Amino acid sequence: MTAKPQLRALDGQSRGYYALLGVLLAAIGLGLLAAALKSAHGHHITGMDNQIVWGLPHVFAIFLIVAASGALNVASIASVFGRRIYKPLAPLSGLLAVALLAGGLAILVLDLGRPDRLVVAMTHYNFKSIFAWNIFLYTGFMVIVLVYLWFLMERRMNAHAPAVGMVAFVWRLVLTTGTGAIFGFLVAREAYDAAILAPLFIAMSFALGLAVFLLVMLAAYHWTGRPLGDLILRRLKNLLAVFVAAVLYFVVVYHLTNLYATRLHGVEAFLLVSGGIYPLLFWGVQILLGSLVPLVMLFHPVWSRSRRVIAAASGLVILGGLAQLYVIIIGGQAYPMDMFPGYEVSSSFHDGVVAPYTPTLVEFLLGIGGVGLALFLVAVAVRFLHFLPVSLADHKVDPHHSAGSATETAPAGG
Image (cartoon, rainbow, N blue to C red):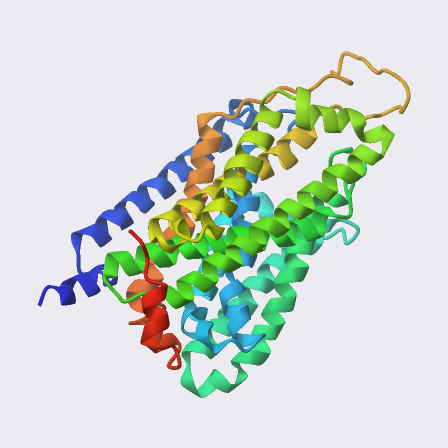
């Protein structure tokens, strides 16, 4: 008798649901307050300057945009690769993709200081700039995924969902490639000028998007009391581990390639050894906490059966992704540009000097506001539409799954 109100907890029937909405609205409000302060006082109230033009808000924004592409993983596996076991979760996957992208774009728009200038960016295009192409990639991705969701949730249109899912799959790869190309095409920055950044960002999107998806799914099914079997959870956590390993592989290749080139030894030493906060974030957070520890947790034969361990590993992957983007985006700008190779440069414009950067509370609040907006959209959407399947029990997602195998994979805790 007590299961019914618990089952409807996320459908707007409990105080906990409204408390969650209140927290998310507060986060959005703080983000808007930070944007208003920047608009009134200018960017000098942030840690950004003429050397560091992309700061902490851009780390949050690019994280959300990259994760939005990866959040569509589950839907793509179901529609493109024909794995029907993931089909019930495809609507939630598409919803997360749209919401995360909206949160990331909101940060970028509010970071302009004057959001009305967005009209200029949308009406005047320089097609030699990757930023101009990304406007089409981001808006196109949102439109395609919304159409995909409509086809998934409208029974009359279900037959066309695989075709739109294929378009969305290809588009998301192009989108993430374009995001990585923002840095890969910047030849003036030694830490950026690398073609491998495009596939690295694709691998990052797979890992970060799936980590966010797992946390949202675990939280939603825990709060609503809906059945969540071990079969689909085990497959998703194994897939997450593969994606984390792929990101680690591309990171190793990227740095080994740079170390092979003598001209890049300086920037590599800065990012990996002598750069202060950047080596600490790289080795301590990105590599250890964000890659190696989650891999051990997800592949361990006993620990990986616990849902709390899976949730913790997903959280660590997200933390490592944020640290990775911080090192790439901000560390790459902090290292001085090599304006005259072979010569030491110094001037009153701080040429040849490592640029200092300390994030401010305003920047942090703006980033949190974008995250709050994304999660608010998800919480409201699942209230009015059926994005969450009633049951993901093993016998529901896979009728051929035997009771014996379900017993073997029962979680050890959590």
